[in-house]
Image (spheres, rainbow, N blue to C red):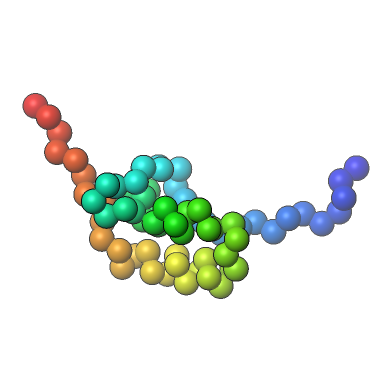
Length: 68
């Protein structure tokens, strides 16, 4: 038997495309910094929501030039 109450789901902008851009230091998938990613589960829900609101204002990913 389970212990009862389920753990609340932690909101996250993660899209399972995890790679940090060397220039910006942001994840190409979710646009969070490595510090934000590392702290995510310890942040309060209001703190996570504030970061998620700010993500749309961060620069888009810089795509590497393809070699020909």
